Amino acid sequence: MDLRLLRYFQAVAAAGRITAAARDLGITQPALSIALAKLETQLGVVLFDRDHRGVHLTESGRRLLEVVTQAMALLEEGRQQLTGLENEPVGRFVLGCPSALGCYLLPGLLPGLLESFPRVELVVRAAPSTQIEEQVAARAMHFGLCTHPPQSADLIMLELFRDEVCVVGASTPAAARTPRPWGEVSAQLRRSTLLYSSIMPQALKIIEELSALNLAPARKLDCGDVHMVAEAALGGLGLAILPRRVAAHRHPTGLSPLHPRLPTVADTIRLIYRSDMHRTRAAELLSDALVTRARALGKAAPT
Image 1: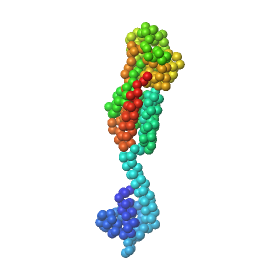
Image 2 (image 1 turned 60 degrees about the vertical axis):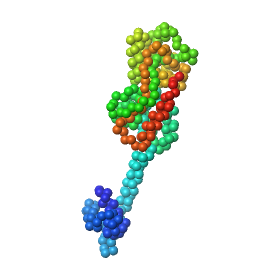
Image 3 (image 1 turned 60 degrees about the horizontal axis):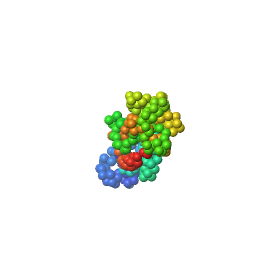
Image 4 (image 1 turned 90 degrees about the horizontal axis):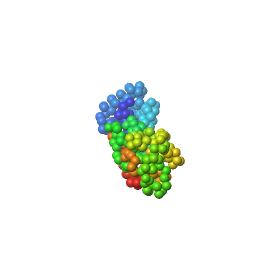
């Protein structure tokens, strides 16, 4: 139904005269009369009784006026809400984050964000980096925190901070500060179980490099989850391949890099989002805050 005709109808009902309503609307009286006739034809009812004193709503007209008044109020409310979405920090956003990254990053990242944007609903979804990239590209997530370079050309990626994936083992504080003899370390590696997560491409690369250096472990155990890798290594099950920040989280002297001569893989944590994402005021503020706060937290080097 043409909203213009309904607004004309409202104006005539309020003015009680077609001439006065036409003047208020800034159109001619004949044009308004034609519009009213068109509306009555579309609805199949008579909306006004007409006499020398003006026009009066029929029962059908009164009922339509009630409905139109409610509908126009809802439309105005919707318009105001949309304006708010564009110009105010309000809305719902989904943030993807690998669980291992989230455990040490989110506790420092989210409290300030939630306090700064009380009208923003933030949903956090845990997933591997590759899945997060797919979900952001498919618009199922608005933002993603990734630990590998995204491959999609549709994504914007902003570097937050850097980490390093390496072979770690349970250690004493003194051992964490002083490298052990290389022969002792290489022998330990060859006879140990090496824990890793196959969802980390960096871990697979380190395993390949260890084999090339004739340092293949006696057994490799894919634990799937990065947290399980860390906990199993702390429990004495074996050595582990982990990001240094994950190894240092909550157990700063419990897991440490095994030796500086062992292969490592540089790791960069990035914020990603679609290049064509609808940049509402809330989206802009949230992305800026995520970058600023994550970079500040990333300056704290792992122990």
